[in-house]
Structures are given as C-alpha cells and as structure tokens.
Image (tube, rainbow, N blue to C red; front, side):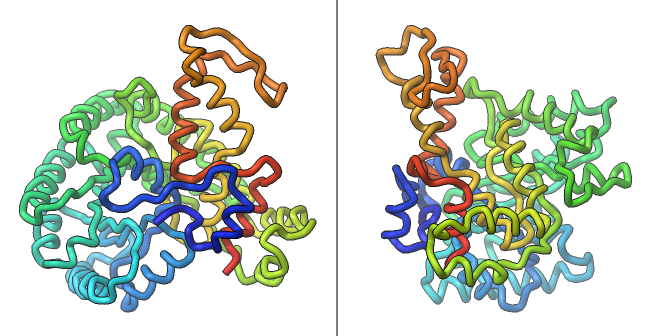
Length: 387
C-alpha cells in the first residue's frame, strides 16, 4: 500500500515531485510509525465490518482500529468479539488488500484469547491498541502481547493510549510519565506509536471543545500534550512517534464536493471555492489542529469519521519548500554546521539546530511524498477525495 495509492498514477504524477513510498505490514517499524496517517476507528460491532474495511482501503485509509472498548456498550463485548473473529475470517477469505489493522482491547486477557480465536486470519492483524496505559496497567498488556506474538509466530505491535487521570492530574503526572517511560522503553521494539486520549482528559473536568477550538486551546489538555512530547517525543533517538488527538466533529459531507472534484483533479481555479466550503462546514478547526499537531511534534491522527482522512493526509504531504530546506541542511558537505539562506530565499537554515527537523521531514516525505512546487493542500485534498 501507499498513501494516495487509491488515485490514478497519472494524477499522482501531476501532484508529486517525489511520490509516497510503498509499504506493508512487514515494513520496518520506523516506516510504519511515520506512515500511520489518519488512523480510522470503527466499533467492532458493525455487522458489515469486512465490507467497511475494504471500502475504506479503497478510499485511501492505511490504518484502522477495530474497537472493543469505549465505542461499544459493556454488554456488547462478547458479541463484538465474536463478530470481530467472523469479520477477520471473511477478510482473509476475500484476499483483498486491507489497511494496517489493530484491535483496541479492554483487558490484557483479550489479546491472547483473540489471537488464538483468529486462527489463520491473524496474519491480517498488525497489533493492539492498549487503553488507559500506565505502568501498572501497561506491563500486563505488554506481557500478554509478547505471549500472543510467540503463540502466532508473527510480529504484533502495541499502540498505548495515554489517557489516564494519573497522567492528567498535576500532582501525579511526573511519576506517571516516569512509569510509562520505563514500560515503553522496556518493550520498545513492540511499541509502534503512542496515542493521546484527549476526550478522556476533557471528561475528567467536564470539558468539551467547540468545533472552532483545537485541543491546544484547552489549556489543561495542551499542557499534558506538551509534557508527553517533552518526555516521550524527543528527537535524540529515545523518543516515540506520538499521534494527534481525535477530532469529534464531522458535519462535512464529502458528496457536497463531488461535482467540483469530477471536473478536474486540480479544480481549475476552484481552489478558493473549496477552501471556503471547508471552513463553512466545520473543518477549519480540524485543519488548524492538524497544523498544530505537527508544530508540537505529533504525527498522524486518531479519526472517528472517514471525512477526516483526506485532510489529515493532504496536510501530511511535505511541501517542495520543506523538502528543499531539509535536503540542503543534510548535505554531507554541511556536516560541520553553518548557516545558509534557503533555496526559496525566504529563511535561514542553520545546519546543526535544524538537523533533527530535516531528518523528520525526510522521513515524512518517504511516507507521504513531496508535492510539486505549484501543488498545495487544496489540490492534494481534492485528489484524495475524488473517486
């Protein structure tokens, strides 16, 4: 699979200076963690879940979480597990390409049990999402994952969700972060990414952000994100990929844009019209939050509606200007440091301080590609939405 692989090759060629690289479930963990993109959550109770998975793969989704936790009622868990096993068997029989698939469990025991029940279809599973992750809860989860991996004979990743009250509350945050760090470092090879549970953070104080506000505008939440990145997102080789929080609003209906998109993959001058329509349909907050995610060191995003996927992926593509700067900074002859004017002659590139940024930018370029010089967000969004 690859990002934007669902659009025609000719259209991709027109959009990208460097196309996104292909990857699969057996790719190196570093590539997969950078390529997660918009991770779409779906309740495991959906009766046509296999159809949903294949449909979303055809629309450009590359990672999905099938949820047995907060998205379903406590009384539905047994039935959801049975449905999940049936749907995996169905997907395996069809032989269709599927996204990276993860299961969000409630308790460690579900991991070993589900891997056993999935049988041959476990080969479609990339790992598990571990809720309310702390050191106390996390160690049993990680031990169960190791046992399941040994039992099925394939690599299984963990994506812990950082959302516990201990992490949110100021008096316990420092020790909670220390414990989480000890745990994920001990099992580093199995941790694909860390996810932020901002909805649970807000819940602890009876808060809910409006559609024109980002998670960073809720200062108590922004403070937690900053501390998580400070401890667990460092660029010195000790950090992990940390993904952006969920966006709760989805009034946008993609069909509203289909007549425009069919006329041209590049809109032929309709870029401002689409941009205005996006703002009018409550995506302005999402777009600002995606930009703030990256500015604060996060990559990828939890999504609960398909309409969020294309904006996340469009804003993840590396611009030609970013790519040019990153390449200049990382040229071998610049190894000793120094300062230079950017090729776009609009900024200073300082080799040593900007090196980590440049390395991360080129990693993102491998996963999401580099846009042509005259291609921007609107054109990438239009191509991502077009059928």
